[in-house]
Amino acid sequence: MKRFWCCLGALLALGLLAGCSRPPESDDGRLHVVATVFPAYDFARSAGGELADVELLLPPGAESHSYEPTPADILSVQECDLFLYLGGESDAWVDTILESVEPEGAVLRMVDCVPLLEEETVEGMESYEAGHDHDHDHGLGEVVGYDEHVWTAPRNAAAITRAIGEALGEIDPANAGAYAANAEAYASQIDELDQRFADFFAGAGDRTMVFGDRFPLRYFAEEFDIDYYAAFPGCSTQTEPSAATIAFLTDKVRQEGIPTVWYIEFSNHLVADSIAEAAGVETAMFHTCHNVSPDDLAAGATYVSLMEGNLEELREHL
Image (cartoon, rainbow, N blue to C red; front, side, top):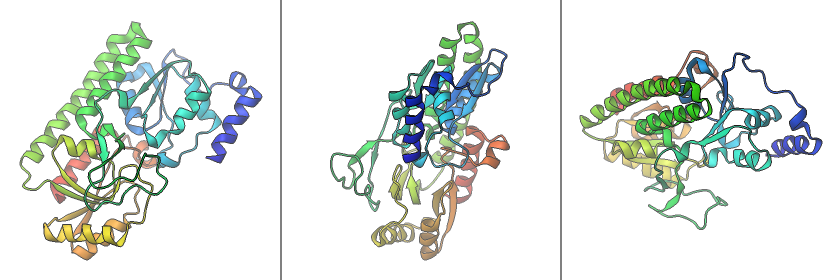
């Protein structure tokens, strides 16, 4: 975070926030929306349509937990018409910005749009690393804070899309009907996808999933009644599980005849590979949609397209 503090300190100390030019944007009267993570970006560009210029703050392929905003990012947050962010640990840097500069526009947190679930430590999972900012060490089944990955449940994604449409309408009342219609059209696509997931899991004989990785899918698992085991909690920064964790997950795969060990996007999937090799099964990726690669973004990836890909992977590997 050293570079961030230097950037922010320089901007505040030298009074450049008022003098710097605003990042390039369209001059046709569109709203300027800034989103920290891909899901908010995707929902906002769908709800805004041609009436909004939506900027993704987190670079494609970047890790949000270690992201350091630039001076241009700080200006974008301050000067946009609507700022969308997650509101969890992975973008805690946003709170530092908001405490230092007052946004000129509206602010919406995704975690405020839906009911929250508590992240938990399940059997076999590594507990949070030493020094994690919680009151005490957590054991099996204990709470380690609210899970921020609210969009992973499609019904939540639909609700957040509709909330963004409402927020845009409040900022630009003359076009409120258009924002509402755009948001409803995309939310309806997500609702239809949600039903397809429900239909799939209704016919699944076993809903147990093992992740040789972090598990940022608590909301998805809760919605579709999935039993899960994983190496780490969703916001953990650990990369090396203990021998006991690997042994537990390997035995779980063997004993319950689980055909696939899962990993998430941008993972080196070494842990999943190790467990799968020891158990004699295969691996597959589940895309959490937290961020996308530059190629995926250029190719037009959306929350719906990524989750459709997950559904196909589940049909093949679960």
